[in-house]
Amino acid sequence: MLVFRRLLSIVAVIAVSVPVVQAAADDGQPPNILFCIADDWGWPHAGAYGDAVVKTPTFDGLARQGVLFEHAYISSPSCTPSRGAILTGQFHWRLGGAANLWSVFPDRLGTYPEILAKAGYVTGRTGKAWGPGRPETKARDLAGKNFKNFAAFIEQRDPAKPFCFWLGSSDPHRPYKAGSGKRSGMRIDEVELPACYPDSDVIRSDIADYYFEVQRFDSLVGDALKRLDEIGLSENTIVVMTGDHGFPFPRGKSNLYDLGARVPMVVRWPAKIAADRVLTDFVSTTDLAPTFLETAGLPVDQEMTGRSLVPILSSDADGRISDDRDAIVFGKERHVPGQLAPETGGYPSRGIRTDEFLLIRNFHPERWPNGTPDYQQAVIPNAWFADTDNGPTKTYIVSNQDRDEQHRLSYELCFGMRPEIEFYDLRSDSEQINNVASLSKYSEQIQDLSARLESVLRESDDPRLLNNGVTQDGINFDDYPYLGGAPKYPRAK
Image (cartoon, rainbow, N blue to C red; front, side, top):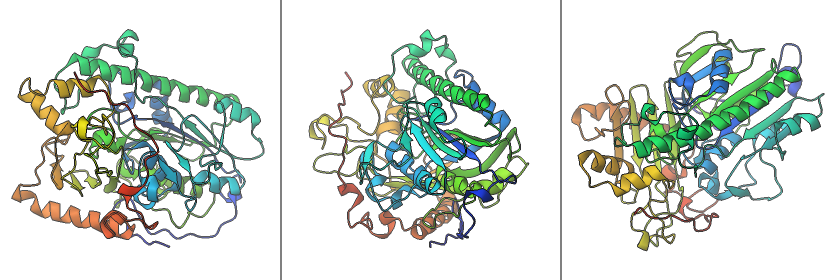
């Protein structure tokens, strides 16, 4: 069993044998679990976080009825590895080829729904679960049997057993219907732009279109909660609502900045959790699997690197509950093979985030962080900054890079080359724009955080640090097959 000194999101985990699910609740009834996950929904795009444009009444209501997390992060800002990390409760770099997008999920890895099913839970899923990719054993249901929707699952389940359901959605993944946000009544002039973008109504309208799909996901979850109320199961059902990584915009998805690695998250469990609380503890979505197992009265799987949220959820206080949750670690392997041919790798990087600083280590700074701009020489034909999803914002920033200094800076921040070490002082630069790694006054902090990051990577057997990217399967992260084929990447005009 791995033992972690827990500098960040890891602690020593001792698996203790306990009775099967009956031990979870005071009344002998283990909780139901409803896990609701959006596709590409990032922080802080919800009303509960102060966004004045997007309307998220379901998420905001859950925040009032449960616990709102200010510092929730993913393991990797890419769909497949992030979802694999959630299901296994492990850092994505421990998942072999599943650390990459469009990969194979190894049979050697277990998932929390499978563990719960063996313990007597009824499991199911709808919408997007793990993926894109395929399990090594194709018939395997990593998140449970597929159902048309949550209502269909509820109708067919055995009411004598607790349930665990994965409520997935493809919202707010691109593409969007251009102008859908504005047509729905949003005022694009009120959309607040990240500091890395130039002032543009084109970008504001694109973000409003993203908001439109965020709102659609919020409504989907709202319908599920109404069904819970109708059948009287809300009180003893743990509801988690979150996203798999940041929004699909430049410097967001597939990047380790807050725009890519930080997600909205709320947890509600009326039977056990005090309501209307806001926590600033740094938590990872890898912490959810051990949380679900503990609440079900089951031992935490020995391979899990996440740790249960039960201790901080059980408190009735706000703010920072656990002193050792003062930082978080995350990273990235290959998103899309978008480098110059014949390079098949991605842009491997690892990061550590505290209240005051963000440190990022880029293992191959000679590569393009979001894919090559040279579509004619790309390993995938016509791949054009392939790690950033196509859309109006991407096209605008690339097409207008020579307009003025503001546009040029935005282009460099979103698509330009990056050094091996990035370091951001969040006390004066909350949006992580100015890399101060070269300033001597930060040398002590950089050394300290680098040591903390390396300690976690070593203790979690990160192949990128320990074996130059060669995993326990004997294959380099960069050499695993990409199953997604050749996506189309039309270039900016």
